[in-house]
Length: 542
Image 1 (cartoon, rainbow, N blue to C red):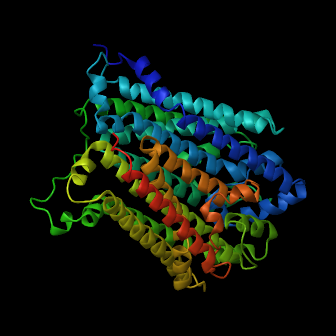
Image 2 (image 1 turned 135 degrees about the vertical axis):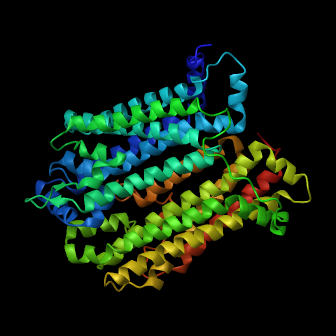
Image 3 (image 1 turned 45 degrees about the vertical axis):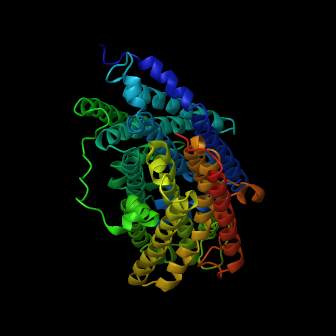
């Protein structure tokens, strides 16, 4: 049989499965891009205002780490500076989840075995997933180009922006295809690919932060780390600057290499197996596994420890930048306004504290990502059939969900506290005076916002189990877009209020307030209780 037999049918099936998810990814990104373009045009209508903002940004390692490098002073260049880094992360994650969903997840759930019983070649599932990713990336790039051009900006820069999105997506589709061959579980494959996205973002940020400033004090030439980051290549194409189209060949080359490697690897393993085998378990279990709480901890232990350690390391890296922000910028109004936006629109005269408040918002978003991943274990256990065996014992449905919620909340709290403490440690070592305890408290203040997201995950799991994965991750995207990036995109306050992170006090830039945190916690408890009640009233679903 031809190794690619049935590819067309599987492509149509995959497209039908993603007929809701992919349009949401693409249209939501287009909406953010449109809002961001309008916000830049209204906030910086003159050349002088843009020069002031970009001179401050080019002097700040922290801003360059988060936003990328300025490539000019016209309106298109500022739109590129404020939006490209975020949009590239979105398209990278879209491809990561798409490819793993249609490859490794199908094998893990048994769908691939059922499909393979028909006239389907060995390479057809992987080929169909990659073709769908390529089509989605082309549409994504075209939509981005059209959105920018509809704002009246130059076509060449818009084409470069859209092309950067497309080829970056292709690169991460290839990376996800390789990750799907390595592990037996979709969670592990998604975790590896998403980690690569995070590392690529950090490496790109470091390369931009240590780059060489031009004589005009605005443009920055990225250092070598940006050149080794797949997320840096799209930026290095310099849309609305001196466009360098040849750089876009780098992500295409990476995509081609990863695709070839994934096809080689798929022939070297059995269906359902991974090239990295799971470790055998101990010969006997501990007594803690006899309780739902102990079992939930055992199932989530590895990922929880990884998220906590990752948060701590990220905090250490961020803390070292606090004093540098103050030394480099002083009272630059352009950067103060930008930092205030990243901090959620709140803040005061202390630029360093506003910087840390903005970073605490980022930690809160990471914690929300962790709670989504951890609580979606409920859905995978249900779909895989293991929950049915557990619930056939004396364990109630409420107790089963509650055990996962407790473990998740503890993990999120530990991650946020250690991330804040890590930032405080390196800030103190660099000569800052914000305080370890203050930043640890600022990190913990983000917990109620993450808990609201957790409550929403439990709610959709109880009400719409088949859509719970898509809705949970969509909630994270909405929370980040409306909350963390709402001010930068110029969204109205009514839209920004949709995100729980909008209501978290911007500590340490402002004094702590108990009322909004208690209100968020109450909403989280109500959502969780509603999800538990709905789960008790429905049948188990595979």
